[in-house]
Length: 554
Image 1: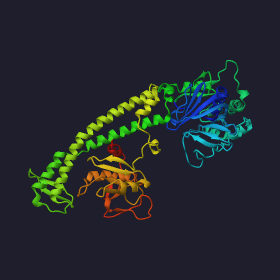
Image 2: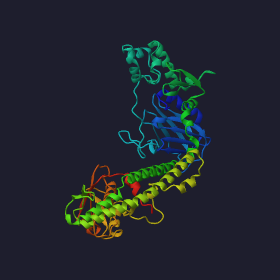
Image 3: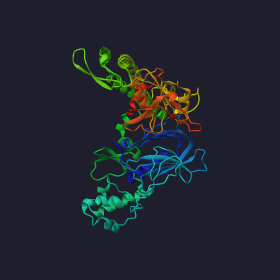
Image 4: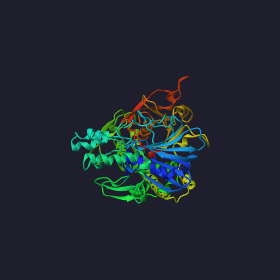
C-alpha cells in the first residue's frame, strides 16, 4: 500500500529518523527522478524514500557503494525534524566541504505532489531536485525553495483551549464535524478526526491535547517503559503506520515508526529486490528501459508494416492489365475503369503525370517492393524479438544485482543525452533512415546542420523535403532517377519531415518537396533558411512508430 502522510505522522516519523540518523555519516545522495526515489547512502546503511504517489514508502537497508551520478558528500546528519503541523521532513547536513553554507535535504509529503530537494545557503537555493515542477511555487535547480503556505490551523503548539475547541465544533452538525475539525485544528486529518470527536467533544479535546503536546514537546512524547511507540492500523488499503491507535481501526504495536513503515509496505518491498537494484546507477537503468521501449515500438511498427503490405500478385495483375489495355488509356487521368481478364470491371488508380507504360512500371515496382518487404521484415522482426529477449533478461539481472555495471554499459546503446556530447569522430549532420522500399532518408540534426545536409551531403537530383510553414529539419530522400520517387517512400520521408518539425503533434501535416537542385540559399540568410522552387506538397500523418521501423541499422 501507499502510506498516507498527515502532519502528526510526519512529525513523529521525523523524530524517529532523528533518533536513528543524527550524527550518521552521509556519503552520497541519489535523486532518481525516473523512479521517484530519494536515496541517502550512509556509511552504515542506506535510506530509500520512495516518493511516487502510488507507492510512497521508506526502507532502511544495508550500506551500498555510491554509483555514477550520485551527489557525493563527506558529511553527517546534524538533525532531522519537521515544522509544526506541516508535512515536510528536513535533514540538516554539516560538513561535506561546505562548512560555510547550510545544506539541507527537504522531503515534501503533501498529497500526490511528493518531492525532495537538496538546498544550499541561507536562501535555500535548490541544487538537486527529484521532480522538476513549475507554477506559482517552482521546484527547479537554481530556484529558491520556499515552504508551502502555512495551514493556519489553531493549536499547533497544543494551546487550543477547551472553550476554543467547543466554539469551533459545538454548533456544527455532527456529520460535518470531521471536516470542520480538519480545516481548523492542527495535527488533525481525515484519518484521525473520528478519534478526536468521540465519545464527547470534551473527551475528544483531552485526547487531541495529549497528542498535540507530544507532537510539539519531544520530552512529553517519551514512552513509558514497555509502552508501544508505534502502531500498525488495519485499514481498507492495508497496514498504515501511525504513532497512536485510532478509533475504528484494529491495530497492533510495532517496535518503532521506522519499523512500522517498513512492515506496512513489506509486500511492496518483497515484490522487487530493492538493494540489488540500487547498485545499478539510475541513468543506466533508464538507458535499459529506453532500449526495451525502443525494441517494443520497433517490433510493433514492423508488425504493422507487414500486416499492411500490399498484395504483390494483385499489383502485378493491375500492371499487366494496364499494358493489355494500353490503347484504351490516355495520359493525364488519375483513375479509370478497365475490363479485367475475367470480364469484370476493375478500378485502377493512376498517376496523371505518367504515361500508361510508366504507370504499369510503377505497379510492378510496388509489387517488387512488397515482395522484398515480405522477405526483409520477418528477418528484422526475428532480430528485434531476440534483442528484446536479451534486454528483458538484462533488466531482470540488473534488478537482481547479478550483472556487472561495466558489462551492462557495453551491451546498451548510448543514451540520447550522451549522444549530444562531443568526443570521438565528428558526427554527420544528419541521421539515416531506410524506407520500406529500401531508399535512404537523411534527416538534419537541427538548424545549424540543415544547410550542411542540403548542400554538402546530397546530390542535385535527390528529393528535398520540409514541413510547410513551420520550423523543422531538412530531409533528403536519396533518388537519382528521372521520374518521381515511389509514393510510399516519398510519404515516409514526408512523415519524418513532419515528425522533426513543430507540426509533429498535428493530425495531418503539409510537407513541401522538390529536387534538391531547386533549393537555393540566399546570401546572408539564417542557418537552415532556404528558398525552394518547383515545390509540390503532400499531406502526411505524423506517426512516431515510423521512426522505429525505418531506423537505418547501418
